[in-house]
Amino acid sequence: MMYGNGKFRLGTENPPATVYVGYIVIPDDVDRDRYIETCLRKERVDIYVEGGGYIQQCHIDKNVLQNIYFPEKGELGSAIVYVTPQFHNIPIVVGSISKGDESQLLEENSFKKVVKFQDNTVSIVGKGKTGELFINVESEYEDEGNVFVTLRNKNKSSKFNLKCFGDINIYSEGKTYLKTLSDIDLKVIEVENGEEITVSELLLDSSGFKLVDKEGNEIASDNEGNVNIKPTTKCNLFEGNSPLVKGDELKEQLELLSARLDDLWDTISGAPIVPGDGGASIKTSVIVKKLTYITSGKENFDNINSSKSFTD
Image 1 (cartoon, rainbow, N blue to C red):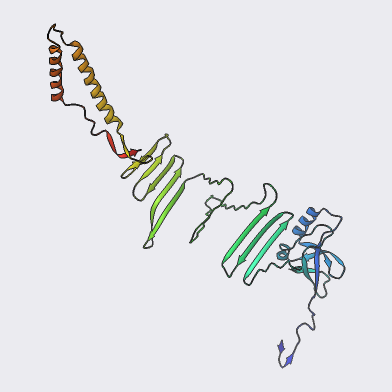
Image 2: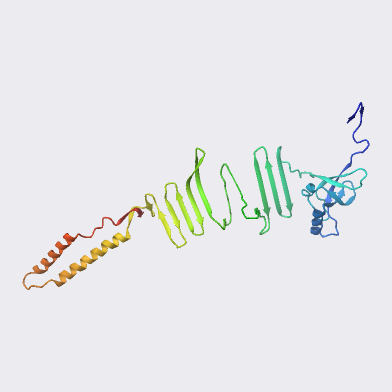
């Protein structure tokens, strides 16, 4: 630093703090879990000084505190760097360093954060060179190894937005649940000239579901127990080789046929029997009845088949 025409060496009047290396330890006469809870709350730790010595209740930077490992009793935890400011005999932990092969630097432009406890591990790895992020949660215990994401605001209008300009793969070795108190709208879209066009859409709400494609084919249910299928051209069940019949049309024609058979039977059974005519009187009655059928029309089964519904 320059003052006028003279020179001044930085630190000669106020020497820099002395830097030391130590290790996080836990006293033998305390409950481990309760001790760690107190350390995190008060931002104080006990350290073993490299080369010998023990310091209690050292101040520790809150960011460093999140990165240290608390050992089991009688063991050494994370290696740390602490300073003792001049004129203030108060050690302050200002950083943590790796011991041996503990380095979390995988490669250039990358980071790795690992937190372990017994057989539980949580790790986050980021690789700048390849543009990849890995989040790993593992546990050897039952009902552990979970990830929770919670969004909430006052009027319950929080939004969770996820965009992927590629594929999304979801793999599960158990059940997959999707629950909502409102509606679900699932779409397959195409983009033409910057405009989204719905190719197919599945709507789920409290009344049922509705599936529609861009050709206008539709399958829907309602809260009265009905399921409606509306094809634009043809609805096939299985192979769809044979048309289904139209119930009302078939019923009408069968009732007409049944009535004419009953009428014909009544004509035959009511015809006069003339001895010796060889049944000519009965034949005449049947011919007369047939003429009435011809003039009044007859049953027609040409229109009983559906033009849209088919089965095998």
